[in-house]
Image (cartoon, rainbow, N blue to C red; front, side, top):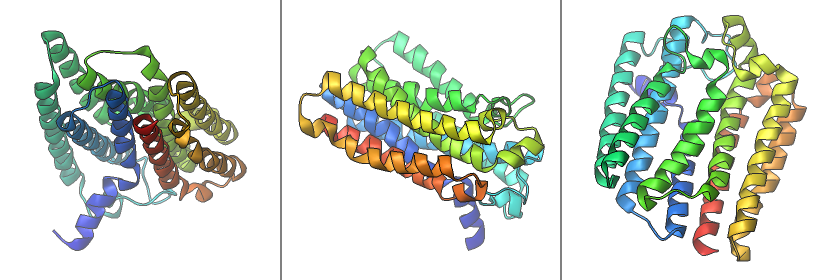
Length: 301
């Protein structure tokens, strides 16, 4: 395997999006710690499982788009290995199988360590299978849901409600409705990363028949939607802190709000898709930074 091929595999894994997995597990584990329960082994396995699922989704996204002719040399985002010919469709398909196996293995170990009763075993086994299927069928299959504009809902669920809620439950073995606020907030920030990707590729996706939510909304409304995602996420973090934290240090996450505002203003005011190229990585890092400071506030506040 040449150095260029390795580089292309790394690029296909989309490392700029991977901070979202870390952000999700950080927040879920910090909430568990605040509830009086924390388990290093469960936290690490949650992180590995989420990372493998995300890479699986990224591989499947490129494979599915390639099969449907959606990703061409016209796309504004970085060209993936399969587009440049450095990785063949057959090789990427094998990569999918490897990621499925790794996701399944880590998920099975996680459930084996964390479950306490048969209900946990059945429920999280089904959720694990659902997560693998969802990662693949975003762009793969006869009716991929990413082409129907449902990707945003999927990201909100898996990087918010299930990601944080599952990480919390597997350590606490209880559910508290109050964690829905940060879970939804984190999911909305992850959704904003996807929206940047879709706004950037809106013209190419429209031509290819990939009706993402950004395509359905149009460029202007898509930018307004982006600002709404960030505003609601900021509000939900703040509401959780106001009702549950009783020390000023718990509000340290507010330091990220100027970054969220600056990012929102940039996306809203720049109408050229090419201007959004660096915004995906920026939004991913802002999401991680916000969740990291929110988690820190939970621990020290």
